[in-house]
Length: 399
Image (cartoon, rainbow, N blue to C red):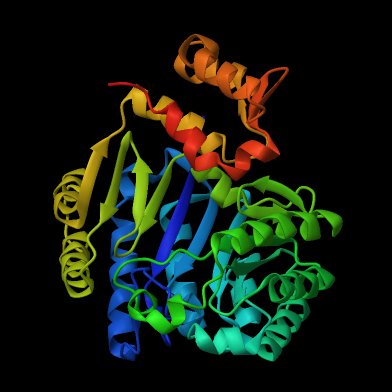
């Protein structure tokens, strides 16, 4: 039986870097550079040919950057390469991130032809002043138009990203955004709290930092988000993610449940064949290495040896995932989900009993009202989710 696999494809290009963004992305790269990068991606994907027939690809996520800045034909070429190398599930979930300022109706139609069946639209806020302040290239009206285009193009699985704690945002403007979005009935909504990352333009702007809501307001925003989305029929299935019933993100769930995934492109992370690793982060070096791979693939080359040698120069931060790490991740990633973790599945995966390993920790937080044990499952309570970072750190095993 073939193993399940998910793929992430990183498109590092965008029209403009937002003030808070610390993702590996580049603004205003030339069309020539984009073409070189797409060719490099296809070479990296082909490199996996010796192992591909052991897996069935269940989900694909095309993220960035802003993938929708590329010509749709480039996206199509990458997906065609994936389909040539890997066996796809009969009903795969294939997502692409789009920015409201880059959505074209003709591109959306083409995405559907390429097999893409899910969109993730980065709105962030319905307040145009806030959008301008944080460097977004779109306004709310463009989001509405893009959403309408997506529905008209046939997309029946749309996720909308919203951010809280933005400079100049208050509870009223956040609730206004949430209300407007829920009235449009996207299938999925993600709400992320702003994190000021070192090295971003935002981190160096004292005037902007002074506009960020304080901790008390941020907690109120967090509480109101749950209330507004719950009342609109959205099920919270992970700390920051909500969906209509049965429409959770299958791809992200793979990350939270310890499934295998391969990341293609610069800086992309993978968990594959018992190892966790990232690709190199230098754009020109990545392109050059993948060009060498492409040349080798045209020859009568031992593909397994090529994979092994290319991996050594493409990858960094390589970590072998031993059983203790797998157990830790099963717990602190699984507990991010509101359904929690299964004692039976824990035993099946690790041939150990969850309560023999973690009973003291679970009982402590259950007594304090931060965790709940219901039948086979252990989960965080609503109160526990509010302080989840503190609790989840207790599931790191003593080495």
